[in-house]
Length: 253
Image (cartoon, rainbow, N blue to C red; front, side, top):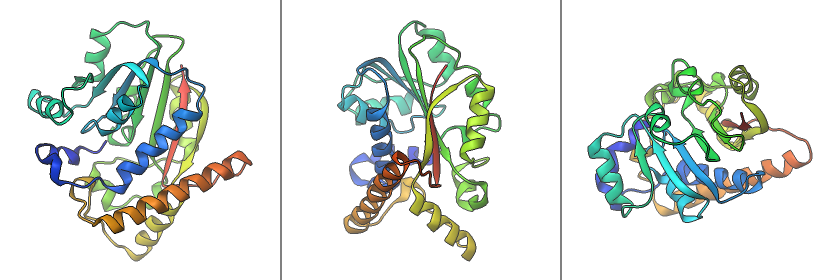
């Protein structure tokens, strides 16, 4: 998750969720529902968890027995605020993946989430090399922004080094011994809008921490993205893959 969201932690009651956040959460829930994963799994670990929004939606669905959130921005002060914001939930916070790996056992089936993280790393192996096999029942869900052709100042604002095609993501994961069991793109409409913005050379200064649109606009965008995603799922079932602003891989190792 993009680090910009930490600026709003101490003002939770007054900010609106960006449509990207809520739609991204819905995408994950859909993919997990259709995946061949036995829930509740022992653990869910969210790498790059940001303000812990996504992992708490999974807590609400009772998808695991243990929950962990990892982010380099998790100072003791940030962790204290996250606990306050989320009613001291059962989520355990770590500042690094290595710290989590050093302090937890290795034999519990785990779902690792790594959504919108790899693009923030100059070298993806910083994370991928640490995700060694801990259990034969582990799953890994990766999602990244797609298509370098639409890389813009907005990516720079968010701290991205690159965007990926689906084949590039698969190649990176394959080089690190991940076995892909599901893959695809999502949010075709957003890719079209981004291409149009790129053509017009429009710079975006908005991030998820400063979304100020009203309920009507937010609701309409959420509806558009819901329809977009459902259409892409239908097309995928009949063997048609359409590009989108993000791509994903569900893996085992």
